[in-house]
Length: 360
Image (cartoon, rainbow, N blue to C red; front, side, top):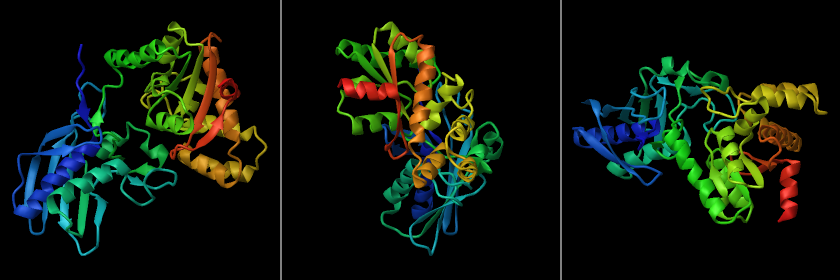
């Protein structure tokens, strides 16, 4: 059965911003707008709650998640555009959009939790209508955001008061459907047909881009597995791959140490506690442990250990991920692990991964 794709809260915000920009420019807001997405897909989005006032305009878009079981499906994302004496486009939270209170996230402390790609999409949408006009306040509001945020891990990550405006492609793919799992298998089949004995499984773009940046391998060896770690390990075994590399951010892959082989946040809590337990067994001071423990994100932990020249501890983390995955596959394939930070720098490698490097 063909599955339906949706669009992200980031696309909603960009579309509503574009509609509001039209209202600011010409005094009327259209029924719909077209926006370009990073996935090279053009979306036509319907605008609701349209209003134009003195030096401001606002409208909204209702989120559609397609066949993905997304908690934000059906919520409204409102954007108000106002002229400002300040230079540039300033982002503001009008309620229901969280505020970042901890370091280590993609957005600096004190700013609304609007991730970098949606920020870029919103800016592009406004500039497309207003040109080089300078001095805009863009206020993003999600009326049900505070309630929806209780179903997420935002508070644990240091994001308070609402949801995050997210999305790296602008498109929502149905990540939990059997049909999507089938699409993932195509990558394994292509790798097998190309004669590769080693396959690299990555949760997403960090692992994929990081691996291809540092290692000269065929792009067909690097396969997206999303949150389906266990499923893809089993399927890789069925296809006879002799070696399986897990590559990605420790915030995602360390969940495997706990035995979570489906890593979606709806069923698998953050890996902070797993990592803290590992760090406590290493020869580092209690003061440093307390500093690491104060970080709300794994990326923040990476940065702290890097500052203290203790990044090598993530080799131990990689070994433990490898060990857990090895038990899962009953040692029927050689396992290796490599970990990247958000900038795609290598932060940890396992013994099995080092063995693979020697075999090249």
